[in-house]
Length: 383
Image (cartoon, rainbow, N blue to C red; front, top):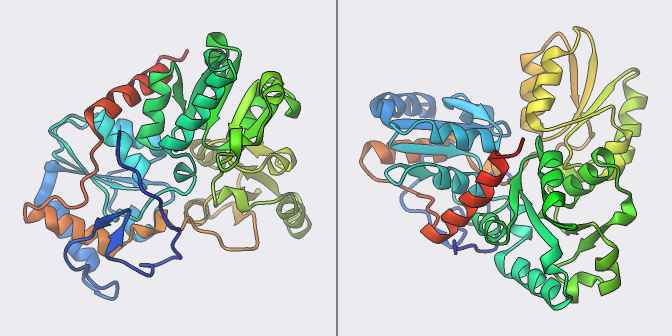
């Protein structure tokens, strides 16, 4: 089982303790953010490493970091891109911890996956620990229901949770293929345990599959038996884990009402990790890649309010200056852990590689990687 420790939520910047994250010491000294030569140092390190290096950048990364990415994309696309570069000795993943784990699972044993800052975690992924999910499964077994339940985990989960799904006949899904994954799951069993994002599970089940809200119950890992009776579990088709994205969960129905008052004729486009009531009020809903493609195809002069992470929204506004693109909410909301990856951490990681030192390697043990890969392969086999 891969080691998972609780991840504290940090404010933007380096946080209260920049030297110790996720239980691992951060060796060496970071270059100061004020160093005017950081950009040139990063370029020089990349040039020195050449084809031995492959830098991946998630859409939610800072501009100062994303400029050095060889490929940008969502979490699964980036993991696939890493696997497609077997000649790259070093994969530097500018994203968060679960993404780097997925890259390690999909790449060869000879490749090293590096996360520039080990504090770059995901609060939602950390809302479903292995022990909590095992306890849930044992409760379902005690209730005589586990053999009728298929576990499905969102890509935004730890390697341990992906492996749990692999061992128990389940699969992984992305926000793009959640409907297909759930269709498959209901061919295997009568119920689905959906981890760890309740909103993606609910939105997919109700808005895409025609279920009712009464078909869904929420398993709270902090309450005995998830806070549910056996009768509730028996009636439910979707058992949703009580987890959420701290960024997308901030958007409210009032956010949508407010932006419509401020911007007449605005199109509201949100991610399916948003609350159900937000998605109901939106004009369009889709994955990060869907959001990007929708704006690419949007007519010049159109107005859009986007409900997703602010770094991406700002970048889209810069990319499509002929369109009026704004953040859905009045409150600025970055993903604080994604923002842990900054230029000083990237430079430190790259220059360490130039010196032959692999810092912050992300490794998933063989058994966990095997079963996580089983769950991922089931997703890849979806029609």
